[in-house]
Image (tube, each protein chain N blue to C red):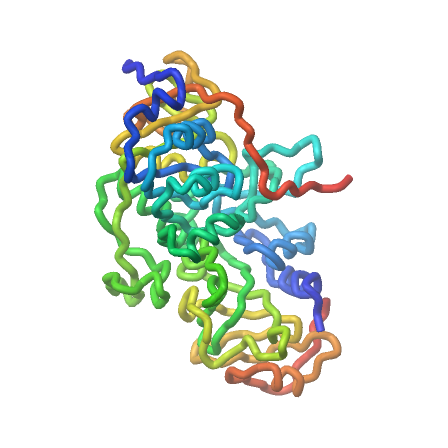
Length: 232
Length: 218
């Protein structure tokens, strides 16, 4: 087996560069690569295009990179909950491309699977369809959407092994598996890095072929956006 | 007039045994509280879960388990977890039986506008466009009129469209209406204490009234 382990997020991101296109896994703050975001912050690279379902909150997740103005463009489906984001968007400092969530997921999947474009019904007749090719199949209109690929795909998993096999946990899986397939360099940070042979092959979500570098993250905060409880 | 809970209770009556259901944020989420106990359904969360359970107790909170509204949740026995691509695969593939969502405007031919108000902060469509483009059955929970009294049931939507010709039924604070395939809001039921004339005045799109219109039973 191939050993893809690196020491930490700094080592995993040693060659990240200005104006790179990144995919960052996560839905809201659930399943985001916390260690790598901190490392990008520290490294100070600028002009980044970030493909991520959301843009974090003001003081966590991708919100941290917005505050330091390292992000040039966001490609997302929903970007609420972030005042600094709103300020930069309205002042023209930040570009934003909003795309339907299922289209975003499928564009990442297509990028990893070698499919340059596909047709989806989502967005037909809306401003999302402006300038895009439409075609009718069996009497219904569909919109052509293109693949997305990244210089670096940065994902967070629950468990991983030295060869990059990954297992996610709960709804922290979300966009991570597709993004893991679509990076020229895919970096996985995991809560638990185990020796080769310790993961059950039947339970692997992302096969190691997609992952180039892996490390065990530390100090996961796993911040909750909407703490909602049942009162007993 | 119905309050939010009244709208949720009335929509819960539309739920049938064996359905897979996606609930949007806001009033639609409340519907889950009023589904009768003898009806078995599975709730889908588009961030990758079939089988949303109740909100956790303080002891059960786990940040790896949230719904599409980013609220902490638990899982029902027999639930399944999957990726966002699989999630929208089942949505686009027409596997979800019922989608319940909120809206700012609906037109008489079933167009829906619920993601963007020009001039205000644009937050994004999330999964709304995927859901409305593919769902077999969409019920909209909404206020019949805006705060200043303007109808939200229109001939044509004025706000940016989320999807075309997709809404089947509306439950508003004033009425239950079906959108006919040939166009028009067919009035099915009145909210308690609301007259047909009040609904006529509050509906700017084509309203179709046939015979007596019963009052809702909540």
